[in-house]
Image 1 (cartoon, rainbow, N blue to C red):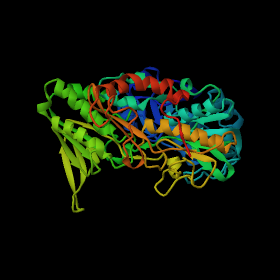
Image 2 (cartoon, rainbow, N blue to C red; image 1 turned 30 degrees about the vertical axis):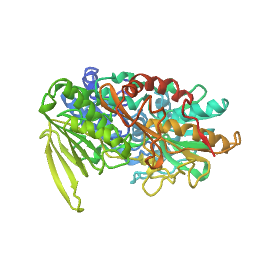
Image 3 (cartoon, one colour; image 1 turned 90 degrees about the horizontal axis):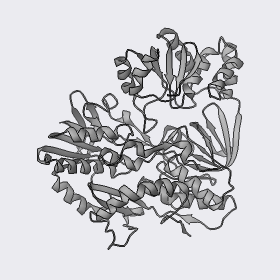
Image 4 (cartoon, rainbow, N blue to C red; image 1 turned 180 degrees about the horizontal axis):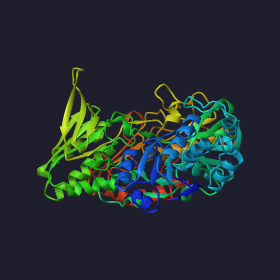
Length: 565
């Protein structure tokens, strides 16, 4: 933990975990305050988990969440009240500590000199100069804001760049590297508040006992290409007419070309009761870094009973992942000789097993082999972990709906997913909240100097790392054309790939374009993607991880060069 003391009774820190609570209590803290909304990141425990662990360690816990860069004066005042009434010393946390530091500064502004507060926060590593006008207003007795949005601050220009990239995930790092591979002297900055970069395709393998979780994580600083500036901050808003992006701390970043690839949001609160029981009571998900090991723990312990695997409405990140977890679990139970004692349900909110028909026959063979019950049009709506029951909305063939309650011994939950809030509320979004881009050029349909790739776009391709790998060279080329440094137009054909882990040692390698057209990368004699393949498993287990870290993130475009119009 990177704990920064702001006053004798208050310290702030980036995200903590449930396991940290005992250490914090031993260090003398009496209260923890969470200033981060649930569901912001794939490695983030819910507040309920923190609250329960805090109570077990003898700590008080309070929840005062704020969106990044949108801490209101009212929230600052509420923070001050909490720190005055709860036992101290107090530790407040968010993703990076910035929101907590902001709340503290606003809470102190009415009775402490702004220069003193800015010096204190700067010494702790937080640049809050953009708050100076608001702190002056508070010191002068200007009424506290009553809305979530803070008063418009005086602009503080942090920097201006040729290319500004929003998001440091697979898409953001890859497109930065692809840009530099074509034009090494570009001025590029990546904006992302995270300090850790994850190889998320590996989490299925973690949940199946094949990978260790730690091998899927590296520091963000270690994967950002040399020469690219990393701005560790969260985006607040876009102003495309001014070629500007506002980030937390009231900082404004300008650009000539903007690339937006922030990933998507996992809406854990979209299933009632889910956040209260994640990581215990047999409730798990491979969609969170710290929970994938719990999946494997549950699978090993379960020797019989009811196992449910869920899939929410589309679109979601890697549509095959929900059933990958199921097949690997069933294969383990088969190897342990207990498969006949298991009752496995796949509860899918959609109406088909997989969206590309060519791969369904091979998958159905495994469904039958493992004795899996397919429950289509069945969407998880709530869960009671202590009672071990899950409630679903079942849509029948005639359009009627009914409520179905199922008991479970283990349930693997995939949460509903949306574009991040700061995207959905921006002028970049379409009516459904996704970035509105041309499916071939990946250029925004309204703003010519904005491109997007990865999971937050409204293209109809599968939201997979393989898709981002193909999109990155297309966006890199087209951005350089827009900057006058290249000619021609690169086009993305909708390629996506989903290595379906049907058993330990075999994979159905689904590869397809827009419209579900099958598009194999290898000759059929080598890997027939419509059939389970040991070579495809070797590719997934041994080749793809180093390919991700050492090729995709480095701008090496093996089998990924863009098609030109």
